[in-house]
Length: 187
Ligand SMILES: Cc1cc2nc3c(=O)[nH]c(=O)nc-3n(C[C@H](O)[C@H](O)[C@H](O)COP(=O)(O)O)c2cc1C
Image (cartoon, rainbow, N blue to C red):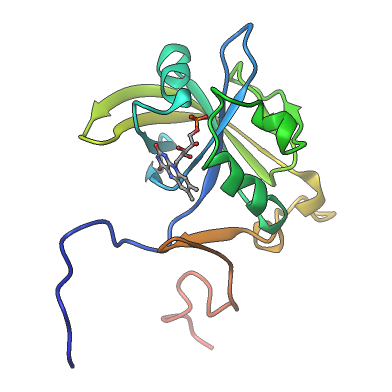
């Protein structure tokens, strides 16, 4: 098979593109779109986001020690892109994108009510890596849009139209190929 080497760089795709909301008391809340985001521990539930110190959100998150990861679905993709190319230094992104602030347990900054899942996070550690600092955080609350809950209380996240970010482009999720463990499950 013919293969070529590229200069070593970031090529781990697809990635989530999440809208991270943050806010300091007395100032308007902000939203930064982040793809350098990941789940890093199951118990305790922990996540990381990597943010460039030049971002307006960087100091807010550093000073407050809090942020909310808001999952992005197809309806929110335009707003997610906008929040990833405009700075909170210059505009109120909640207002520009007609998004609604929602209060969440465990954190003082708002989540985005239009998001199917808001994950409240408290920063535990900040690791400077180079271009980005990594914020390692505990998940302190998870709130979901009840429209994706059925009458038995089961959550149908995959009905919410989540999107992924791959090599500069946004995509909806494709067809279902299997479920966890299906390769070894008896038919
Ligand atoms: C899809 C996408 C993913 C992004 N991922 C990151 C990221 O992981 N870390 C980061 O610092 N900036 C990332 N950005 C850039 C910031 O979202 C962008 O600079 C934003 O305008 C910063 O907003 P702020 O100045 O209000 O904090 C991303 C942008 C887009 C569109």
